[in-house]
Length: 91
Image (cartoon, rainbow, N blue to C red):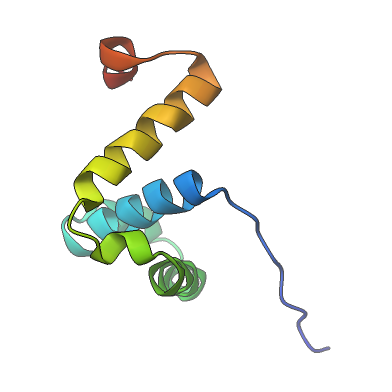
């Protein structure tokens, strides 16, 4: 049976924050590797998601990337928890 692709919709803020987290986890720490040791097959979808995000998000190449990323994080925290500023930073 042929596999049909599954689409996942994210907001731009969600995509930007997830892309950064995946980059950190995949390239700058052993966090993701430790989590995925029990099932190496998970790397296939992780690489697919990461590649799709990187090829879609132009923000990652902009000089003000860090500011855009932080603003996206803040908007997501406000949306989920109603928190802003220092209260959001504590999460």
